[in-house]
Length: 351
Image (spheres, rainbow, N blue to C red):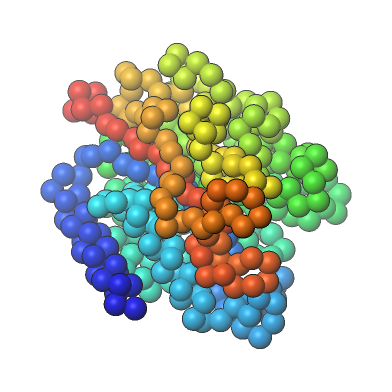
């Protein structure tokens, strides 16, 4: 208990120091983080959603103590990813509603970081949404919208895609997409068409940004439930997996392909195999050294700190330390690891 309180005190002080430092030097590089938090539900029954699995007296017996512990674990991860500067922008998925985001930034030491929320309710039957946290001192939203992903017939609806256009540190405008595409439940091939549909919907919106904006800064993130070399990414979304050093401003580039197949990193483990389901994709403009905001292959990563793992009892090596294993409360963090990417300001062009 004492170690937990010390951790909270130290990280709270770190967040305060970061906020003070930003006030002194606001025009700095920024970090974007994406995290599938594994079913962040509140403990209240939403009669319009199928959330019975996460109630105190049934399903997984999700109670206030477990909920509070989950909030603090997500806060710990966010703080660890940020180091001495908490991430300026955070995309999250597997959140039930706006309330859980409000609790995350008000009932943990994250209240020192000055985060604001962007969230829309999605039509997912379980109540699973995506959301965005941003530090008000770093990011000014200009446009926020949800992009529906619909399927023909009476197929069950999936999560909307969250789109936010805004300005980072008054330096440049960015377009951020937060995704959580349909799962592979029922088989990868059997469900592939749904993810290809989500990719096509996203691509259509991205094309509209390319058409309206000259050399836009586009950042696509999310748990896509496909790997970087799957058809939904390479054919429908048309995210490039090569020639990063010769990037063209009008194309998309999947940095997660490099993470998985060159750096051998993974954000999720399935049947003993690691892969990057939680992806980071950018427009070529971000890879162009003549632009105001820049990034590179080496500035994207899966966050792979030891405290997020446990021993893989079924296969070899390690596995993410999960909140639940089936219906048994395990008390871990998530079944996914976070991913993050750093962007830097070209001082000469920004002045």
